[in-house]
Image (cartoon, rainbow, N blue to C red; front, side, top):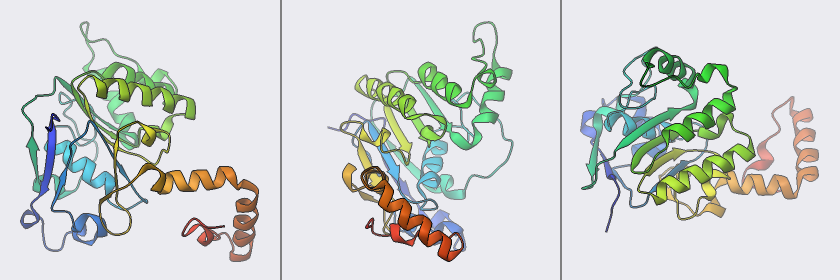
Length: 255
């Protein structure tokens, strides 16, 4: 039985303009619906593959501010979200989330500023601007991630060291075991290692389930760690010959 807050998202393409750029995103344009039957779902894939676009639309459809924050946040510094949110239909389970948060690495500064403005005697500010970027990210996670919550995290590893990513992994895993549901866009092979997580890849022109060891994030990282000298020799040699464009050897993850 599916006990998740969000069990399915359906994209109603008839509500999207025929000339929309969304129809040009190869992986996204083939999506009719996505089913979510586990507490942690990762969206992964190459830059520009559409994963953050889908996460954003799903978060907005669930009532979150496009730039991030909890459902209580309502502000806009730059209206950049796509029309996809208006075409997403969310199928919910019988449970209702008691809390939630939408964390976007790219707009965290704006959210941190609003957090100070929204603070009062009963809800003191965490003063994220007085911490380093990584410290503020982790502080937010440790204060906002709670059991029975619904969370959307867009590249949460952006400001975190590997050690802090492990701390975040433990926080996510703890909350997931206590009834929370997570949707996470990431390139981090550390975070994607959460036991039992479902990984959806946006590569190869279609959204599809992917095993941890088959993700590009894992394979490229493993290859670099195990063959660092050979890779750097080949990469930097090709870059010198091509004037800085020597990365084609990475295609197919072969050296």
